[in-house]
Structures are given as C-alpha cells and as structure tokens.
Amino acid sequence: MSDNRRTFRNPADEGFATKLVLVGLSLVFLAFFLFLPLVSVFVEAFREGWVTYEEALTEPDAWAAIQLTLTVAAIAVPLNLVFGLAAAWAIAKFEFKGKAFLITLIDLPFSISPVISGLVYVLLFGSGSLLGPFLKSYGIEILFAVPGIVLATVFVTFPFVARELIPLMQDQGTGDEEAALSLGASGWQTFWYVTLPNVKWGLLYGVLLCNARAMGEFGAVSVVSGRIRGLTNTMPLHVEILYNEYNMVAAFAVASLLALLALVTLALKTLLELRFGAGAAGGRH
Amino acid sequence: MEVRINNIRKEFDRFAALHDVSLDIASGELIALLGPSGSGKTTLLRLIAGLDFPTDGKIFFGEEDASHHSVQERHVGFVFQHYALFRHMTVAQNIGFGLKVRPSATRPPKAEIKKRVSDLLDMVQLSGLENRYPNQLSGGQRQRVALARAMAIEPRILLLDEPFGALDAKVRKELRRWLREFHDRTGHTTVFVTHDQEEALELADRVVVMSQGKIEQVGSADDVYDRPQSPFVFSFIGESSHLPVEVKDGAVLFQGEPIGLSEGENTTGDLFFRPEDVVLTDEQHALSGKVTACRRLAGTRIAEIDIANNGHAPFHVEVEVPLHAPIELGAETRFRPTRWKIFSK
Image 1 (cartoon, rainbow over the protein chains, first blue to last red):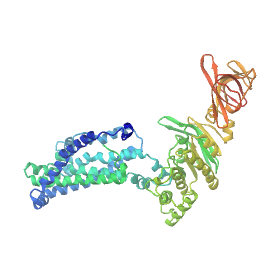
Image 2 (image 1 turned 135 degrees about the vertical axis):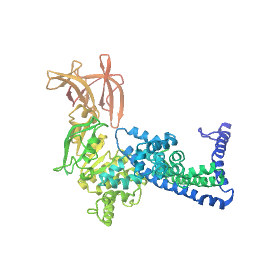
Image 3 (image 1 turned 60 degrees about the vertical axis):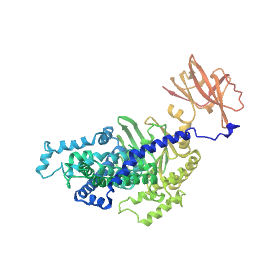
Image 4 (image 1 turned 45 degrees about the vertical axis):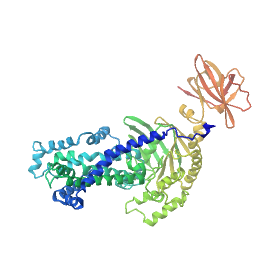
C-alpha cells in the first residue's frame, strides 16, 4: 500500500539536498569569482562620484585610448568578418588537400599565448627585421603605431568568426547552394541570397565575440603598441598604466567601460540565443 | 528534350564511380535510375545536371553538346533528395527564386513572377500556402514546393534525386501516383533516381538498373522483371534464388544429377529462378531439400528450403507453395523451376 503512494521521481533527478549543495556551490563560486569583482569595478569607479568618473573618461589620454580602441575594433572586426567567412566557406563547402591543416592553423591564435602573438610582429617588423627598415624607408611605421596594434588584434581575434561558422556551414552542406545554382543563380547571387542568410545569426554571434575580444585584448597589443600615452594606448593598456600610477578611480572608470562592453555582449548573445535557438550559437569552443 | 549520354566515365580521387556508361533518353520519357547505394545512379544524375563533370565522355541535350556547360547553362530542373528549400524564404519566394535571379534583360516583371508562382502553386496543389516557410510544411508539401521551384525556370529536363526517399510509406505512394500524372500532363523528359524497385517499376516508362558504376540493363518494368539479362538484375529485382549448375548434353545438372531441365549449350554457371516460378513435383529428376521455415506472405506462402551440400553450408532457396499444399517443417520436398535462367560463369 505504501509503495503505491510513493510519488514518481525521474530516475535522472536528484534529491533536494544534493540539488541544494550543487546549486549553492555554483552560486557561491559565481558570486566570489564573477559577480563580486564585476560589482567592485563599478563601485570603485564611482567612489568619488559621477563628476570624477566623467573627468576620468574625458581626460585627453583616456579619450584617445577609447578612440583608438574603437578604431582598432572598427578595422579588425570587419577584416576578420571577411576572412572568417571566406575561410569557413572554403572549409565547409569545398574539398581540398591540407584542409585539416588549415583548420588547425585557424585555431593557432587560440592556442598560443597572446604575448607571443605580439612578439611575432616585433620580429617581423622590428628594427632588426627585414621588413621593418624597408617599410620605414617608405615612411610606414608598423611597430609602436596603430598598424601594429591592428595587426596584432586581427591575429588574436581571427578564430572567432571562422570557428563560429565552420560547424554551422558544414552542417548545412552544399545542398542549398547547388539548388540555387541549378535554378540559374550566379555564384555571387548564391552567396548573397542563400549562403549568407543561412549563416547570418551565427555570423553575428561570431562578430560579437570577435568585437569583445578585439576591444579587450591586452597581451599581444601590449607588446606591439609601445604604450605611448595618447597615441598608442588602447583602453586595456590605459587601465594598466593608470593602475600602476595608483590612480585607482580613473583606472576603474575606464575598466568599467570595458566591463560594460562585456555585459552588453553577453546580453546580446543571450538575446540571440533566445530568439534563434541553438542555431545561432552553432559552434562552441 | 532528348538526352544522350555517351561513354561517360567519372572518377573521384581515382575511385571510378561510373565506368563507360551510355544511355539514350527519349523526349518526354520518364526514366528511373535504379540501383543499390554506391551503384553510381546519383552520380549519373548529377552529371546530367552539370553539378559534377565527367572524367571522360559526352552528354548531349538534343543536338547540343552540353558536356562542358555549367549547371546554369544546362537549364535543368533538379529536385534534391532533402528538397534543399531555402529556409529563410517563403514558399512563394522559393518558387520565384529562379526567375528573380535572372539577369535583368530576361527577368520577368514582378507581377508576372507573382502570377507564375501562383500558377505553379495551383499545379502542385498548394494554393494558399505561399506565405508559409518550409519548416511549416509537411514532407510531402515540401517535396511539391521543390518540384514547383524546379519547374518555375521552365527546365528542359527534370531530374529528381530519390524524390520520395524521405517520406513515409503512405505519402510516398500518393506522391508517386501524383508525379506520374504530373509528368503525363507536362510531358517533361524526367529522370529520377531511386533505390526502391517498386517505385521504379510502377512509375517509370523505362528502368535503368545500375550496379557498381555500370548499367546492367535498360528496359520496361516487364523487361527487367521477366527477362533479366544479368545475375545482378535477376537477384536485385524481385525475389530469386540461385544454384550452381552444369549443362551437359542438353541437360541441366545440379551436383552432377539431372534435375529435369534442359538447356542448349554446354556450360557451367548459376541457375536463377523466382519463388513463384516453381512447382512441387514427385518426379525423380528434380531439386530436393528440407523445409526449414514457412512464412505467410499476403496471399501466398513461401517455403525456405535448404539443399544439402556435401557437408558444406547448405544451399538456401525460397519457393512459393500453394496455401493448401501439405508442407511440413523438416520434410524432404521436391520441386522444379518452371521458368529459369542460367548465367554462365
């Protein structure tokens, strides 16, 4: 009789105590390692009030850093959008030799330390290299200038769009493209009307991640930038300089902008996933 | 539009998918390419469409050598196995796509595209669904949208890759009949690929049976079923059994003993026969074996018979027996094919 009264429980379910411990642990962990630091960034930034906060951001060097970061992202992200799309297209839609090698190569920026990514460009364009003095003789500065920062950022953020699109495009196969071609569409029309719309949400997702990283990159950029105040300082570099000068409020004010960017990215990403399901976030790393 | 395929060979990375295939397709014909997977039937279809190019050989559309023409230039209607409908476009946009992408000189005005789309929707009996998206349609509806989309460009020939492969049995039967009517109405030269022999035999004017990159036989349903020209066709189409035999002095010998069948020339080979072309007999010269199983198949009964093979694994044959015939499991049964064919080795 008592057996019949037992409520049904899903075999994959756990008891209340187990759930409490697991959920509790994750919450405590999140609070300590993510939420608390994030809050403290904003608390610290606003400690001396809105006016100081505003001054810290509008001060010429900070303003230059913000502008530089936006400029670099505005160049690096579109470049990687095109590169990533082209690479993903080649990998997903065509068979060729060395494909596995290309996929590995695309992952390279993820697998090596950003500092090394920066050093590569120092070696390539530094005063001791072949290319550096040659370009300099034509008045083109790569290292310790905006081009170097852009190059390093492009390198570091290269995998984001490609990694997002490759599994998505591989999954979709070439059927739709063949259908479009058989209906008389040109290659370009096929890309524009069929391929691109099929991957647009994945692409947007990749671009978001790419942008977040492009604005936040520290290691590689720090090596190639030379950290000339007001000239080659990006926001992350500027934060570090301010911090080293014990200018906490200003450092956290600039940092809060970066944190805000991260939050906006996360919100957009969640929105995309909610609106378009798992398809939008096809390829996870 | 008639299509001639002349000595086509296709290799993928040195693996030959098609060896020296030739086929003439008459204008207005409905042809099935039938074969197991890996037989090269889809490859042949894609070569006709221009989605792949032959390693060797030529393809003619009428008098025109289309071998090097791109898929766009060939102007064929291709219906893909999984339909390949554009998921971000409505039914109407899907159907109108082929017209919309035409260069401005030949592109019909918007109103005309709209009219054509609605005519095509009528034709495939999907009026009223123009604003749906593909994922809001059933499998059979998607199939018909794919067909309408292919027909919108007024193709010279219609090619269908496993057109009913992804549908359930009932819808498949309905659509089969519907496609036949559709073909008779529009009169397009149509080639479809299938691995389902029932589909091929019921639907097509002529069936092209393929195996391992070669055409085994081309003929009507009656031809390939009643007069198979190769061991492969005999065993692939319908049910059949085969036994190794020898022909000597006009008599067919199985395991050295005459079995009451006669044949012209001396040879060694395989004797093929169908379960329904067998009679039970009491005569001395006949095949005999033990009944191992008996199963009811719709209106008939099939007996599975094992013929002893000198200690080796027994030969296994299937014969159809009358429902009232006294068949006992384990009993020795004598039988003889009434229609058969011997393929020399």
